[in-house]
Image 1 (cartoon, rainbow, N blue to C red):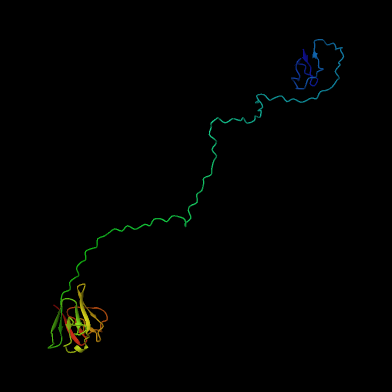
Image 2 (image 1 turned 135 degrees about the vertical axis):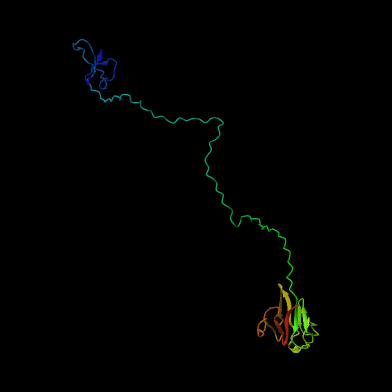
Length: 237
């Protein structure tokens, strides 16, 4: 026995079906199952004739996945004695100390290597010279010079000198401390000590004396030297 759908006329619905297998419409309660008899039912229908609301049914597509039901997030209780969650922390910035508050750096001392002083080389020895007077019948014909020698005249206040020219002709032009002869780097030098009438040199081969010296000047064998008006030849000793 089957129920015939009043909507589409499909008569293959089972007798306990609520919806039509063909169109999905709700089967009416007044629908009677078909019987093999074609005689009309003489029993009057006490149920009033009413047409139910038809809701169209869309059959599911074949092989379609079942609908996913929304699920609330599952709360998982914390495990007993579990450590508390670690919160991320930003790195703490430590500003550098202000220049005025910074501790002073320890002083640094350069390391100097101690170098023993070089042995002083002995000064070069100058060969001795001799001052030979140009005057005839001079009170002293020559004065050997082996070391620093002071040329001048005797004075009671300053004392004697190494080469005294007071008794020479022209000795009145010689100052008390007129000049000095001394060795320097293997050469003999003559220096004016601020005399009144000066020191003059005629180099070897020159026809006349040069101007008054104003700085220490070398004396070489073959030269001539004048202290005021008193003149000498310079010779090797």
